[in-house]
Image 1 (spheres, rainbow over the protein chains, first blue to last red):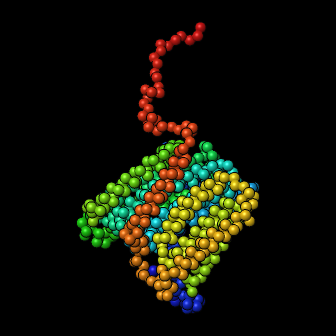
Image 2 (tube, each protein chain N blue to C red; image 1 turned 90 degrees about the vertical axis):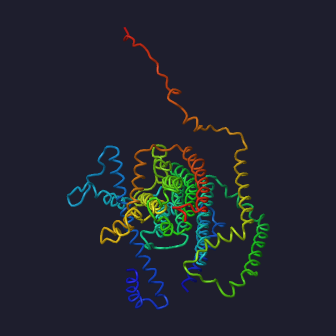
Image 3 (cartoon, rainbow over the protein chains, first blue to last red; image 1 turned 180 degrees about the vertical axis):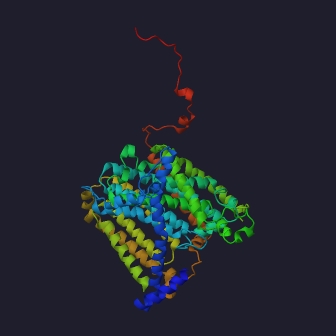
Amino acid sequence: MLEMIRQMLNATVGQIVPAAWQAQTVEVMLIVMQITIILTPLMLCVAYMVYAERKVIGSIQGRIGPNRVGAFGYRLAGLGQPIADALKLILKEIIIPTGSNKFLFVIAPILSMAPAVAAWAVIPFAADTVLADINAGLLYVLALTSLAVYGVIIAGWASNSKYAFLGAMRSAAQIVAYEIAMGFALVGVVVAAGSLNLGQIINAQSGSLLHWYWLPLLPFFVVYFISGVAETNRAPFDVAEGESEIVAGFHVEYSGMAFSLFFLAEYANIILISVLSAVLFLGGWLSPFEGVLPKSAFTLPVIGSVLGGGIHWLLLKTSLFIFVFLWLRATFPRYRYDQIMRLGWKVFIPITLVWLVVIATLAKLQITPWFN
Amino acid sequence: MFEQIIFYSFGTMLLLSALMVISVRNPVYAALFLVLAFFSTSAIWLLLRAEFLAIVLVLVYVGAVMVLFLFVVMMLDINLARLRAGFMRYLPAGALVALVLAASMVLVVGGEGFNEIRESGLAERGPAYSNTAELGEALFTAYLYPLEIAGAILLVAIIAAIALTQRAKRETKAQNPDAQVAVRRQDRVRLVKMSSERDSE
């Protein structure tokens, strides 16, 4: 498929661009195409995740949720709601407060959006289906997720508002604290898999459901997911927004599309954390039936490809984590700030440090079935 | 050609942003320009196929150190006029430091270790070559003792920094989570049985 498009592009580009530039131009065009293929569904998912969130939380709280906006005179259970919301936000005016730092005020939403989508470059969607198959993939993801905090800090500072600034300060301290626990959890994954490449980490988990890293790395799995919730500033760790204390935190002065960029970034980050949890601890695109069903089952015409590994399993596992995000928001009250810090520094980091020693020992002794 | 364009654009960006770090008036801008400088450096390292170093530079310096820098710079009300007043007075000392740094860089880059690279260029390796593994192996075999000593020094620095903040007697109030968790219903609620009384006459 990719080769076919490359040849077609080569033929057409060769007539327009000088020969010395042809290879690079085709390469850049291919990458842009692949980015579009990844990001368009992602943005749609983000829009409909907002809808899913309102429906799920409504259902948990015994309400119906959005059910009015449909299309062409049909209600369609409110499926038109995200489109209507997006249109409304696009048409609204972006108000820049007086005394704010105009340049930074405008650039902050972009800074929070860019890392959230750039990290998708190294996510393996299925065997050998990845935009950038780089050796240090996990480090790249960790570096990019640690950049998300800049959007928040700069937005809070540039707004020239005390509520926004308080939100930014809270968020910065929180993200820096949980990044350490998150990093240690990922170090555990690297020790277990012996590679920083996400595709190889998935391959190292193959075997059966019990070979996936959720079992041997259970403490890391729990710590990673909870730190992920804290990194994305989601409930119960959403003190950066804290609507009851500081109105809406760092984005209180934003309106229209600038506000919705923060919103999109938050949900893109949630999906990213969910995908990463699925890739690192639930075997990514590996099928749960592997090792349970006989090998011949996977060679059946249609059923075999459904039962076998593929992108659908990754999507299913990701959806599971996204649902947990929504579930947490609907059921837990907000953490107190000192408790958040205590959990990050005094509970998670010691847990990960201890389990790192355990995992290193297990890997050194090559304990089967995980390390061999 | 393609690589050179990328190198020169990031190189220009690096020099310009480094210049802005020391010349711009607003300290928050200075910190943000430093972030940009780190990014440009990281891009140049990526051009050299040093992906581990490039990503770790972003992860450690941009993701953690500069966040704390920004945090402090935003919180403090820095008086710029006073900072600028001493410029001429400190110029000789600054120039001396700059000279020493430049001289040592010339000695290192012009020295023996870089001869091979200057003559034959960087060795090309395939995409399967992981310089992360190579670096780790070198650090934990040939350079194990220097690594451990550096780690111990950093640990001492961490402990010293924490000890400095704990020196004064702690006067802020804080909850004791263990005591909070251990609380039972009987500690807080006392049920009193009373006979009902008549309404007021």
